[in-house]
Image 1 (tube, rainbow, N blue to C red):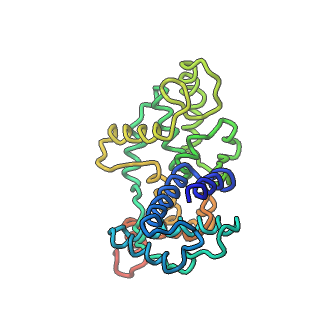
Image 2 (image 1 turned 180 degrees about the vertical axis):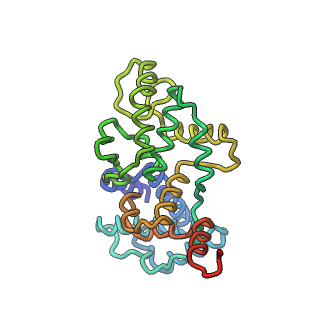
Image 3 (image 1 turned 60 degrees about the vertical axis):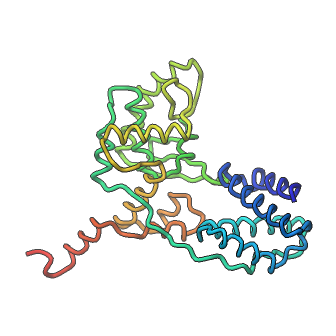
Length: 299
């Protein structure tokens, strides 16, 4: 089993180019299944049938795993068995017929415009770090790109002439995402002045756009810390993580009339179902529609 897991690990890294976190979840789920097989005295993957798969599912439910967790583990095992089936190690995938539990899809958290304005006003634009933070905030909100995509951006990825950023996303899939005037002004201000001052501290050449206080590339963890400090300066009581800005981008775009296919393309979603979670409406949007539509909403 361990040799098959190692082969699957290499497949995820090399062929699928899966992220570190995705691989970590897959391997954890497979190790749990491996322990289950040991307890059941099953030593050959070919001996795992649908009955064994359902027994494992029952074990997960008895362990009080959430429906979301159970669904992820079964999906991991389906993918693993598709791999070993492709390698002619097994003839059938015992997890194909195992139905996934229906999971609740909570409405993604997002920021209202008033909260965003307080964040945009929290940075000191007279300092290199303040200019960087403003550019980072404007870009994340303007494009909805993932924090990992933002962290690896290079100077050559920004085209100011047409206002687009060239993004390399999951699975090395590439796309162009437009940005507006506020993001462009913040980026130009940072790159022309603040970034040069930060880069001088490291005495190293770098094409990475966002740098830390030492002049070296800002990490994903560093970007999260930057946002945390921004929230403190804005005296907000909410938690703002990079993905919340991505949620906010998608929510505001759809609420203002953008079509879902366009938003899907900008977010880099492979499936439209991933974009559909943003079709909820905000209280402000509901009120605007009501006030403009109901005959007795206003005089």
